[in-house]
Image (cartoon, rainbow over all chains, first blue to last red):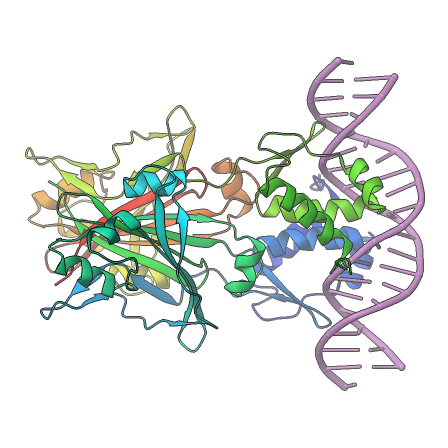
Length: 249
Length: 249
DNA sequence: AAGTGGTCTAGACCACAAC
DNA sequence: TTGTGGTCTAGACCACTTA
């Protein structure tokens, strides 16, 4: 008995293509048959073929170029860039990111604003919800624009006021600034992932079907009191992050 | 002058729905207008409406239940579960995950197999590509099946052979086992994200548009020689991971 | 039974890219 | 000019859920 095809026609087409992509019949970079061609080959209409293709696009297996055709994406291997996470303190008191990446702002740098702490942020910062926060929001790039991230810094005005200012320096100067005020620093870093909103797709120049990595870093003092919070939003493709630890007693 | 609607009709419909979801006109859990209703309201055909809806589904903004309707997904806030990453060593020499989650295997536990190290894994384990590896693969669940993960453990046979065995115990017994052989342990943890393959969607019971978090943990000895590698694949929704660090000198 | 979404047809016209 | 994908129509029939 021959195998009876299961499920809807569009999925059979998607699976036929997927199998041939994964087994190497259609190698990466190779143009795939046109929609019209596939429609004739499977005896279905073009919208049906397109529905199958949309699954492969969402899964990031193929890339479709307007007016040119459909192409196999490069296989999922390890990302090109590994980004060690951590903060280094030099003997002279300067702070720097361990990953050593030099970011520069994209476009006009918008002036800092203020916001009322939403629940989740207030929780992490140990302040009541609605507490006013200093906000700096920067779209940054590096590596000749190959790399982008959205970097947001949040500091409660109550902490700035205690130091007699209303303006926080950017990270990592902020950390040296905290240290100069007698704090010894540690960080908690929360990592999660989600699909991007349309604005994020354009801002970060994301390809179809690429999720985001979302890092929330809370800077704490020696008594585990939160001082500041950063969120870093980066593309989930071509990038991995690295944490190092030994045993916790 | 009134605003002229831009872009294709289906995107206008998607944006109309998205705006009303984000501004609270359609609160979470509320049923949205039916496809037929939307088609009449916008003067388009049902496939056009469906194309717009497919964008919202991919972005995880709405959830569609067959025969019932379309519903607003809960907003993207902080995930329900925070999973601290790390390994604890008790004074009696036992090791345990810092997150304290008790996992149990789903279905029949498959016996360990062997594989030839692929390039990326060989690189992290410091062995030549193709080196034979011990492989344990387990689909695990916790919290009454609410939580699932795919846990793979890889150990070079060369390391097992040096201890006169061909069978590695599961993590975290493996760590105590290494320690008993004179190693002092550290870990490197690589975090990345990607969209799931169809098998992973079913194994992990993923909803539409939910990316994966993919953790690769390498266990190193005191001389930074890799001993074993684990990969943990978990749903990207409802879960975040937490790393803690202080300054690197 | 009525209403929902899931699948599919057989076309059409358009925008874009390459030749 | 030709071939590609992008958008859209105006229906059809089916499977599923709820009442």
